[in-house]
Image 1: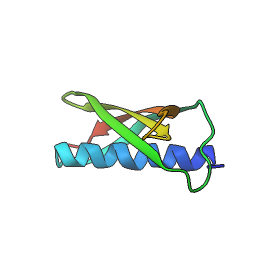
Image 2: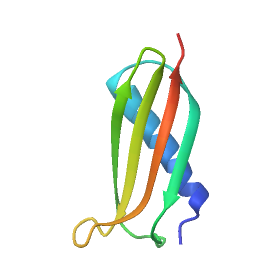
Image 3: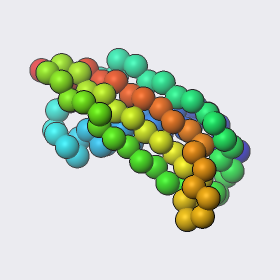
Length: 88
């Protein structure tokens, strides 16, 4: 199965890429949380959804969800929130 630390790293990287695609602001992490809800097997196809929930003057809030079996049952395996400070 995929290690929880690897999933947390995926949340970190993918939410940061989402921020960079919307703006070119440099950011640093304030908080990164993750919840592991179901097992992801090595080699299993996943779908990852990210959402920027708020861009403030100094802080960006993002959510991330990782699903297994995206073409059939689409089971939520992991979810996380990443809060980042904007460097001015």
